[in-house]
Length: 446
Image (cartoon, rainbow, N blue to C red):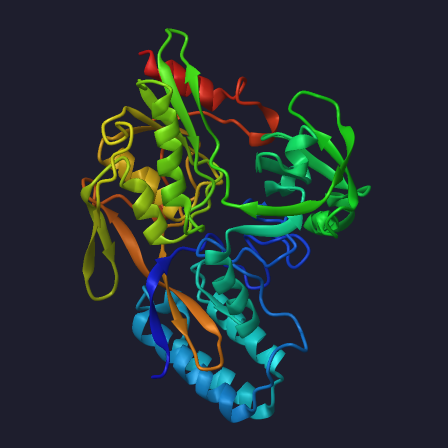
């Protein structure tokens, strides 16, 4: 076989055939069924391990494949699933019959676009809601995203879709960027862009954030508990690392508690950025505890998760398990400002997925953290990437995670269950009124 197994593992939160979990406005948009953070970038789509790009749509940029080439790629893809897929019964799919049926379609004649779309649909039909097949164009975007950092034209916000409320919510702003200067803050909602709302164009209304540096864009913004307001923001180039919001809060009893929002594990710099944030928090004096907010973290790369986890735990923390073996996950200690021993609260919710769930579950399983929030949806299948000669890539469910102290726990089925259930929709509260934050601060005073 000519494919190569990638060395970086990853998780995908939801693998619907024609839907995207995370992306950049103006190229693709997130599925109305998903709630995952996206930057307001016009550069390239944010396709990282916690991201499920949409199925290929017809485009002239794909290199034409003849029938023989299509069959060769499909043979390799079929073999990968047959040999490596986590579920030996293929979730009830007759995988041999699927080979015969798709091969016949190739013989009958398929365009490149139809081939890529059909192959993705075939993987989607396995039913694990994680595995996906990407055309070469999307793979190029995916590879560029991991290392690129932030360099795009926009207003400097990191946002998440809330389809049931027909809006996008702001997770963070880039300090000094156009949105920050205009007074847009975390927990604000983007109700409309240039007069177009979610109801008018689904998530595609965010495409209108795109434009040329120096040009204005008119937004309707709503802060929690306030009436919507109209703002005109001038687009600019956004550069630098993704901000990691962090500050010190005080409990009713006067304890100093650090707050740290980890928005994603899909950015390769997150581990180091969290370390810098912990160092800055420690510089303000000894902390009595730390809140790690994972409610909007939809996951990412195992390496980034492991780097970040090392600030709070170390040693053997569990195993990755597949059809043939269990592989231990060992974490290297990275203590900063006493982070390795600080009392921890981890906040989780329905937006916490993949390696963010594993991160939170590990800290709970080890007794290092109390988990507060809403039960997560359960998306902890680990995907392995397989590259093919045409530049396409399959991300296939290969492992699941087994926690160290509760190996019988099924996080994929049950999610991460908090010790204290607290509902706190992101767009309905500010930090000062957030029920999950208030519960965490109260917990530290117990």
